Image (cartoon, rainbow, N blue to C red):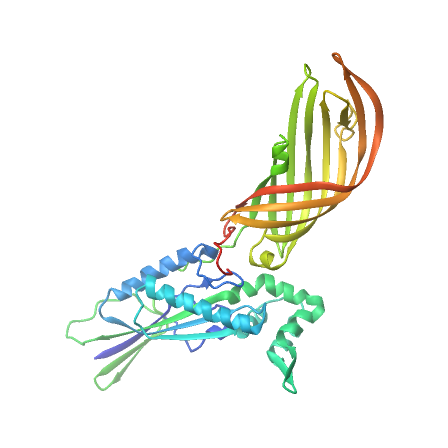
Length: 432
């Protein structure tokens, strides 16, 4: 008899996370990594390219399952979480992610009935330590000092008086924490699976077929048993790398649409809750015969900061504060006194009024790729404007004024179309 052990990790143990390396894994491996959204335990095939990597690995695993010489000995599932939130929540999240992985393996890859070993450590502190060690982040030494020497909880007289999470969050005003939150924490939300496959083959007088060369082959003879150890095994199973998400939105202000002012806006997510956007509106309706003028055109630039639970779970969603600036001109007259913004016949700049202000809003998910964004803004509106009266076939100028207005200068109920990789809302029924 000749015995050979082949180790196949299903979800690739986190590349930079030592906590996922539960045992010394031989190099003859294939693997894949599956990511979870922050605070959620559902396995989303559309998130971070999970589906394409799972499909690729499934084909590789199926090729071994189809060979009766191979038998799956055990399946080990390891699932962690990032440090945000309480220890209790993270432990539960880790367990639910492991359960989701197990369910997927049993149903989609015919691994039901096999012995599963489940490990849910909660926060993957060792994984975070490895990521910091291999980085060049600011305050790296101080962060590692906390990770090395501060326990997860500091307990005195039976009470928790400090914690590793608190010290990291307070370090240098939270700057290192925000850096890790953006770059490292997503890596801690992946899950790993180790599938051990064992095979036995009878020795025959027929020579074994020629196999592709390996890096190193050592053959030992122990009685009637031949043990073959290889440093590297060539497995033709591609591992699809994770694709970076992309978040943007197109939107229209329904209040302007109702007022017959066509408009279109775009918003781009910059990271860490920040976004930049712009809007344009244009309406040029008129009827000299009836003395009706309904003209308005101009644009806006804004920068926003999203915050709150929803904003953490999904970019471009939830509460937001912003700063905006507007340039616009107008001409409104419906058979009575008319109002025209800017200087008639002047340069483009002279024709414009302007406004600057602060806004608050909330972007509410209403469909998979649609949000409703409610916004109110207050600030200053300035610029020259003119009044006139329509008389017969003429327009008689009345006066020229300067506007100095402090108060509401912006109102939106915008329909937002979410565009980009991973930029969608999940169905209701639990956190992502």
